[in-house]
Image (cartoon, rainbow, N blue to C red; front, side, top):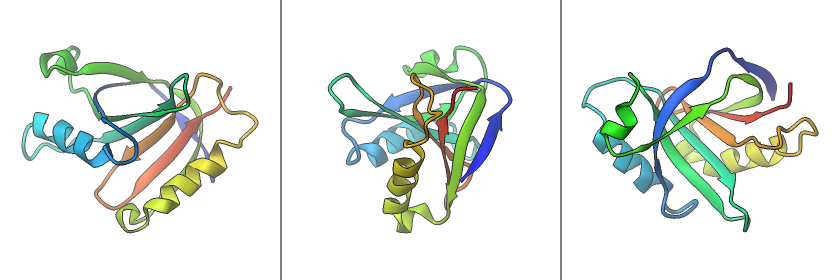
Length: 136
């Protein structure tokens, strides 16, 4: 695990999964169906517990222009700039438990931001960068 600095806020729009973890792939399928074909765009996973402890998962895409999400019928979210703890899971689709284990370890960090969330950055189809926001 390593320290990671996100230098600017990232505006995204998202589709909320019906359930976690079972509904995650369906949420990404719905999100991808909204995006123009053959357009390269960074995808994100954003998750956090609700008041009852149930995990809310959002499959998200970086907005190319202001209001894009609402034009597509999606809600928007801002991934906050700042300090994160990070680890990359290679070939995540063949080792989904490694993603959960990475977050389990990072969520024990005593500098965890109290209003933070778990963040996944999908830069390609094989690897995922897992991050949790830390207090500055």
